[in-house]
Length: 120
Image (cartoon, rainbow, N blue to C red; front, side):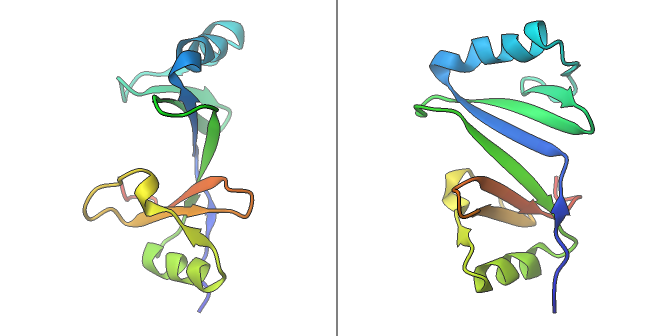
């Protein structure tokens, strides 16, 4: 059985503390993206049909971009990815008990959240 995976709408940019405020100012003031305020204190911006979330990573030395994949069957999709040799990295950020999804990395070490669309 093949489980369908498709691109999600959320993009997370994990930014070191020393670059956090200037990165937010870049997207807000320089680029002029529309802020997302419904999930404060989270900082987000509308990025076309996507949502760009800027997260502070106090222990990070450089920024990372994390992507999202939707699937109707997270258990099956994560099993399918594991069978294909994809690396699981769930300890990278807790998702909470009962969350229907998990974290994986692509071959270039880009983190992807695999989740059911209604998991949150």
